[in-house]
Amino acid sequence: TLFNKITSRLPLFSSHYLWKDIIIKENYDLIYIRKPFMDINFMHFLQNLRQRHSEAIFVLEIPTYPYSRETRRIVDYPYLLKDFFWTHRLKQYIDLIVIYSDNYKELYDIPCVSIDNGIDMDTIRLKKASNNKKLINLIAVANINFWHGYDRVIRGMNNYHSYDKEDVHFYIVGDGPEKEKLIGLTKKFGLANKVHFCGSLSGATLDEVFDISDIAVGSLGIFRKGLKYASPIKETEYC
Image (tube, rainbow, N blue to C red):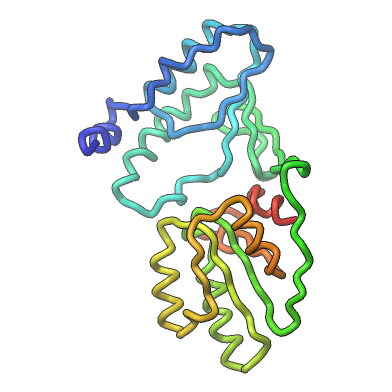
């Protein structure tokens, strides 16, 4: 609701996710948590969890760091301010941070370990070989955001086709906040017949697009959110 969206941004309020309803009854040697935006509710959850499982090792995964530039919306800045306030209290509850970067040995006075994303190969069907000889098909699959940098591909296609080279098509699978901007850029360059916005696809329908594709496009704009290194799972799936 609008009320929830407003209050969740205020300093002494929290998101309306009910962390208190998550109860881990079993005894574990290690508890692995993927980091949300921090607020007082989440810290209370960690505190209660630590009290119940005092002997366990608590690991926090931070999928993107630094993450302060992942949002460009001013209305989301209060979340970042609250997050900054609470993250410096994590050392009371967290023993180890997992991160996808070699640049940090320690965060918030907590030791870090660096890993890369991986996939289970048995769960992904290998694409069929494309028999296209007359054109080159690119594919990108994402919840489209500014750091994916697909605008760079569209601009490159505009320059490329101005020299009357091989026919190149770009299939963008997914939706997201940047989609309309990419559609506008495509129309601006007159590439509507070469850049195809497929929307969200899955299963056999997605496999069909992969099968006609020659090159998969990963994230080309991670520098836009202040990163020099990343390990997106999509690139692992592509390979």
